[in-house]
Length: 193
Image 1: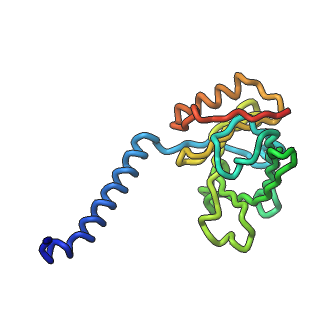
Image 2: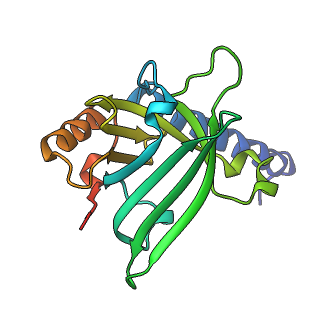
Image 3: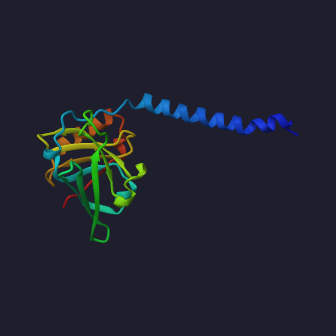
Protein backbone atom coordinates (compact mmCIF):
# COMPACT_ATOMS: atom_id res chain seq x y z
CA UNK A 1 0.00 0.00 0.00
CA UNK A 2 1.29 3.49 -0.91
CA UNK A 3 1.39 5.98 1.99
CA UNK A 4 -1.14 8.81 1.78
CA UNK A 5 1.50 11.58 1.47
CA UNK A 6 3.08 9.83 -1.54
CA UNK A 7 -0.32 9.41 -3.22
CA UNK A 8 -0.97 13.13 -2.84
CA UNK A 9 2.34 13.96 -4.53
CA UNK A 10 1.77 11.77 -7.61
CA UNK A 11 -0.18 14.41 -9.57
CA UNK A 12 2.51 16.98 -8.81
CA UNK A 13 5.30 14.58 -9.83
CA UNK A 14 3.50 13.68 -13.07
CA UNK A 15 2.92 17.36 -13.90
CA UNK A 16 6.59 18.14 -13.24
CA UNK A 17 7.72 15.25 -15.46
CA UNK A 18 5.44 16.40 -18.30
CA UNK A 19 6.71 19.99 -17.97
CA UNK A 20 10.35 18.88 -18.05
CA UNK A 21 9.71 16.68 -21.10
CA UNK A 22 7.96 19.54 -22.92
CA UNK A 23 10.76 22.00 -22.16
CA UNK A 24 13.36 19.47 -23.28
CA UNK A 25 11.52 18.95 -26.57
CA UNK A 26 11.38 22.71 -27.17
CA UNK A 27 15.07 23.14 -26.38
CA UNK A 28 15.98 20.20 -28.61
CA UNK A 29 13.95 21.60 -31.53
CA UNK A 30 15.57 25.03 -31.14
CA UNK A 31 19.06 23.52 -31.11
CA UNK A 32 18.28 21.35 -34.13
CA UNK A 33 16.57 24.13 -36.08
CA UNK A 34 17.85 27.66 -35.58
CA UNK A 35 15.38 30.51 -36.15
CA UNK A 36 14.19 30.59 -39.75
CA UNK A 37 15.30 33.59 -41.78
CA UNK A 38 13.19 35.08 -44.55
CA UNK A 39 13.95 36.87 -47.79
CA UNK A 40 14.85 40.49 -47.17
CA UNK A 41 13.03 43.38 -48.87
CA UNK A 42 10.06 41.46 -50.32
CA UNK A 43 7.77 43.61 -52.47
CA UNK A 44 4.30 42.09 -52.15
CA UNK A 45 3.07 43.92 -55.27
CA UNK A 46 5.75 42.11 -57.29
CA UNK A 47 5.06 38.85 -55.46
CA UNK A 48 1.37 39.03 -56.36
CA UNK A 49 0.11 37.05 -59.33
CA UNK A 50 0.00 33.39 -60.30
CA UNK A 51 2.46 30.85 -58.91
CA UNK A 52 2.70 27.17 -59.89
CA UNK A 53 3.66 24.62 -57.27
CA UNK A 54 6.67 22.51 -58.24
CA UNK A 55 7.23 20.61 -54.98
CA UNK A 56 5.85 20.45 -51.44
CA UNK A 57 6.00 18.61 -48.17
CA UNK A 58 2.87 16.46 -47.93
CA UNK A 59 0.11 18.01 -45.84
CA UNK A 60 -3.47 17.17 -44.91
CA UNK A 61 -5.14 20.06 -46.75
CA UNK A 62 -3.61 19.12 -50.12
CA UNK A 63 -4.18 15.40 -49.72
CA UNK A 64 -6.71 15.23 -52.56
CA UNK A 65 -4.52 17.27 -54.96
CA UNK A 66 -2.91 15.11 -57.65
CA UNK A 67 -1.51 17.87 -59.88
CA UNK A 68 -1.82 21.27 -61.52
CA UNK A 69 -1.51 23.10 -58.20
CA UNK A 70 -1.44 26.87 -58.44
CA UNK A 71 -1.91 29.87 -56.19
CA UNK A 72 -3.02 33.37 -57.16
CA UNK A 73 -2.22 36.27 -54.83
CA UNK A 74 -3.82 39.71 -55.12
CA UNK A 75 -2.85 42.64 -52.89
CA UNK A 76 -6.01 44.39 -51.69
CA UNK A 77 -6.34 48.16 -51.03
CA UNK A 78 -6.12 47.54 -47.25
CA UNK A 79 -2.76 45.71 -47.76
CA UNK A 80 -4.26 42.30 -47.07
CA UNK A 81 -3.76 39.59 -49.68
CA UNK A 82 -6.48 37.61 -51.41
CA UNK A 83 -5.41 34.00 -51.91
CA UNK A 84 -6.97 31.56 -54.36
CA UNK A 85 -5.47 28.07 -54.39
CA UNK A 86 -6.56 25.46 -56.87
CA UNK A 87 -5.55 21.98 -57.93
CA UNK A 88 -6.70 19.00 -59.93
CA UNK A 89 -8.24 16.41 -57.63
CA UNK A 90 -8.16 12.63 -58.02
CA UNK A 91 -11.59 12.57 -59.67
CA UNK A 92 -10.38 14.97 -62.39
CA UNK A 93 -12.24 17.97 -61.00
CA UNK A 94 -10.82 21.24 -59.76
CA UNK A 95 -10.54 21.89 -56.04
CA UNK A 96 -10.62 25.57 -54.99
CA UNK A 97 -9.74 27.19 -51.68
CA UNK A 98 -10.08 30.92 -51.11
CA UNK A 99 -8.25 32.60 -48.27
CA UNK A 100 -6.93 35.86 -46.93
CA UNK A 101 -3.41 36.82 -45.97
CA UNK A 102 -2.02 39.58 -43.79
CA UNK A 103 1.31 40.67 -42.39
CA UNK A 104 2.27 38.57 -39.38
CA UNK A 105 3.01 41.74 -37.38
CA UNK A 106 1.63 45.24 -37.45
CA UNK A 107 3.65 48.42 -37.31
CA UNK A 108 6.91 49.67 -38.72
CA UNK A 109 8.80 46.46 -37.89
CA UNK A 110 6.44 44.30 -39.97
CA UNK A 111 8.26 41.96 -42.35
CA UNK A 112 6.43 41.51 -45.69
CA UNK A 113 8.08 38.08 -46.04
CA UNK A 114 6.28 36.86 -42.91
CA UNK A 115 2.59 36.46 -43.56
CA UNK A 116 -0.35 34.82 -41.82
CA UNK A 117 -2.97 33.17 -44.04
CA UNK A 118 -6.40 31.78 -43.21
CA UNK A 119 -8.85 29.70 -45.22
CA UNK A 120 -11.50 29.56 -42.48
CA UNK A 121 -14.65 31.72 -42.78
CA UNK A 122 -14.18 35.41 -41.96
CA UNK A 123 -16.36 35.16 -38.84
CA UNK A 124 -13.66 32.89 -37.35
CA UNK A 125 -10.79 35.28 -38.16
CA UNK A 126 -10.60 36.46 -34.54
CA UNK A 127 -9.30 33.01 -33.56
CA UNK A 128 -5.48 32.86 -33.72
CA UNK A 129 -5.61 29.13 -34.53
CA UNK A 130 -7.19 29.72 -37.98
CA UNK A 131 -4.17 31.75 -39.14
CA UNK A 132 -1.20 29.78 -40.47
CA UNK A 133 2.33 30.94 -41.14
CA UNK A 134 3.39 31.64 -44.73
CA UNK A 135 7.02 32.73 -44.78
CA UNK A 136 8.80 33.67 -47.99
CA UNK A 137 12.20 32.14 -47.31
CA UNK A 138 13.89 32.83 -50.61
CA UNK A 139 13.17 34.44 -53.97
CA UNK A 140 15.22 33.77 -57.09
CA UNK A 141 15.29 34.91 -60.68
CA UNK A 142 13.65 38.31 -60.14
CA UNK A 143 10.47 36.92 -58.53
CA UNK A 144 10.36 33.88 -60.82
CA UNK A 145 10.94 31.27 -58.07
CA UNK A 146 9.88 31.22 -54.43
CA UNK A 147 10.67 28.99 -51.48
CA UNK A 148 7.89 29.19 -48.88
CA UNK A 149 7.72 27.46 -45.53
CA UNK A 150 6.81 27.64 -41.88
CA UNK A 151 9.14 28.20 -38.92
CA UNK A 152 8.29 24.79 -37.44
CA UNK A 153 9.53 23.16 -40.70
CA UNK A 154 6.25 21.21 -41.15
CA UNK A 155 5.22 22.93 -44.39
CA UNK A 156 7.31 23.73 -47.46
CA UNK A 157 6.56 24.71 -51.05
CA UNK A 158 8.67 25.50 -54.10
CA UNK A 159 6.76 27.78 -56.47
CA UNK A 160 7.51 29.15 -59.93
CA UNK A 161 5.88 31.62 -62.29
CA UNK A 162 5.91 29.11 -65.15
CA UNK A 163 4.35 25.66 -65.19
CA UNK A 164 7.53 24.26 -66.74
CA UNK A 165 10.10 25.16 -64.09
CA UNK A 166 13.85 24.81 -64.39
CA UNK A 167 14.61 21.59 -62.45
CA UNK A 168 18.05 22.92 -61.48
CA UNK A 169 16.48 25.95 -59.78
CA UNK A 170 13.89 23.82 -58.00
CA UNK A 171 16.63 21.46 -56.77
CA UNK A 172 18.75 24.41 -55.59
CA UNK A 173 15.83 25.76 -53.55
CA UNK A 174 15.24 22.32 -52.03
CA UNK A 175 18.95 22.07 -51.20
CA UNK A 176 18.69 25.44 -49.45
CA UNK A 177 15.62 24.22 -47.52
CA UNK A 178 17.59 21.18 -46.39
CA UNK A 179 20.30 23.41 -44.90
CA UNK A 180 17.54 25.15 -42.91
CA UNK A 181 16.32 21.89 -41.37
CA UNK A 182 13.37 21.03 -43.62
CA UNK A 183 12.85 17.27 -44.20
CA UNK A 184 13.28 17.51 -47.98
CA UNK A 185 13.53 13.73 -48.29
CA UNK A 186 9.75 13.70 -47.83
CA UNK A 187 9.05 16.27 -50.57
CA UNK A 188 6.71 15.30 -53.40
CA UNK A 189 7.04 16.79 -56.88
CA UNK A 190 3.97 18.35 -58.44
CA UNK A 191 2.75 17.44 -61.92
CA UNK A 192 1.90 20.56 -63.97
CA UNK A 193 0.53 18.88 -67.14
